[in-house]
Length: 369
Image 1 (cartoon, helix red, strand yellow):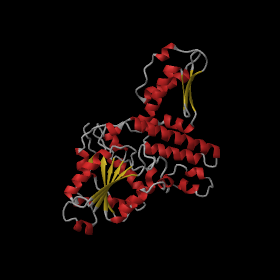
Image 2 (cartoon, rainbow, N blue to C red):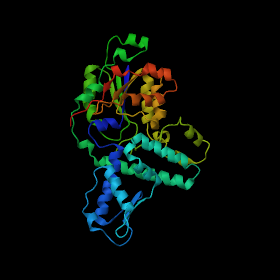
Image 3 (tube, rainbow, N blue to C red):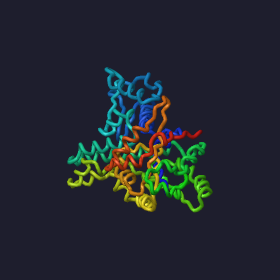
Image 4 (cartoon, rainbow, N blue to C red):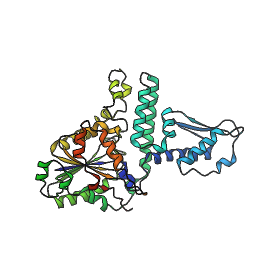
């Protein structure tokens, strides 16, 4: 039996890396304000800060750059509400980016992709608005890539032992419901082959691969380990970033097929997947043999529903095990993840058979830096 490991942004966050959408947006506005404080002006394709007239406020140059998005919003609100001399205008050139700014504290990566789709739906039939939306989304994607590169994750060191143990866990008989398959698993055994389906753009997982291959070969001679960067890799032109919407089961999306406007499909993941062989490599793996799914740091949100539906409802998918996020207050996100997984199944009864219950699941480990 094989194992397919879904790696999402929670994996990077568990390593202490600032890869959340809030981190990215905060960094953007910190840079904007820092430049404005120094040069009295900031402007790019998305956002602008500028004095309304020729008067300048000396006190602004001495202000500290905000350390949270709440502080950023307070500063920008203060600019907008100021009267008289030294008034500062905060101008959003992108309605989509303004929507991200307004709801940033509540959004994750999948929510941004869903927000993009909502704007896509509301602008269908409006060619100029669609072009603006797609251009803005492309700009944000490039800024995101630049931000993640600036983190220099490839230079970070951390203890790999906690996650290495998880990746190579035996497949336990009580994690599989199908009786004839349980009979073949006469004891808890290491997977025959492991595929890491990495939804992150970052190189974090790369630090694990050599050690994992060595340990897997020791545990089970002839076993293979592969990694598929399904959403692309930073700085790799042959595997470009995939950032967009991926729920082709959505009722609104189905209506797009009757609208003769290709701009509706510019940032739809299925068309972006066709640029590389990654998706085909995934299909070859899940078609090859029975497999168990590990979910590590992935939200299982609807923006990846087309792919996740195919994986979860695949006849050879026999078990789905969640590694849930244990919060500092003692709560966790196990139930939230089950809700998200539920939405990917058309056959709800099948989901109940495949999902490993919480009392046999584990929290996401936290590697030491």
